Amino acid sequence: MNSGDEPRESSPPRAAQLSSTQSPAPGSAKLRQILTRSVFWAYERGSWQYDVIVLVILAFIFLTPRSWFHDRPRLQLSDLRHVQGIVQISHKKNLWTFQVDARLVQTEGKPDLQSLLQDVLKSRLRRNFTIRSVTPVKDRNGIILGYNVVLQTH
View 1 (cartoon, one colour):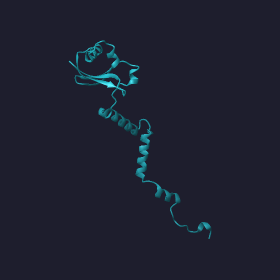
View 2 (cartoon, helix red, strand yellow):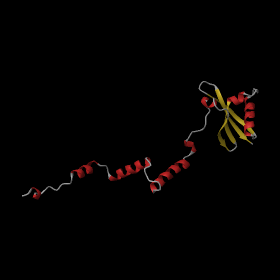
View 3 (cartoon, one colour):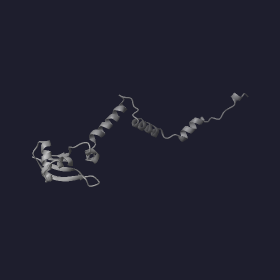
View 4 (cartoon, helix red, strand yellow):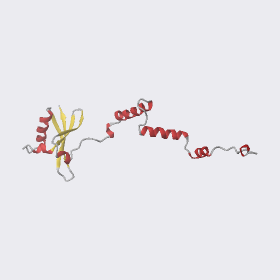
């Protein structure tokens, strides 16, 4: 008998055996590929996958509540070295909250803090208002950097 005529054992190839025992389930590999392509933005522009990713990003931007982000401006010593001014912090109905740089108030000669703030804010805002509260903003050394002023407009 020739060597080519001998019967061989019927067994699957070696590569097929390894891949069936070591590879993850086909569903999880597909899911991993989808997540990888989504994170690295690997879909072609104009494909439905690309459009879905864009919609998810836009939904996050426009549907995320503002309360999740605490990015209100705060006076810091480094800010006050360069800028003097008034910063609006919030507005609810007829209540406004501003941060006023302390250097704007100290330039006046009046001893009463509320009347000084009234004059500074009146020249800037050009509205009729009543000051509800004044809270000093201090740095970690206790130096007054400015004032949080809550106003009620008429």
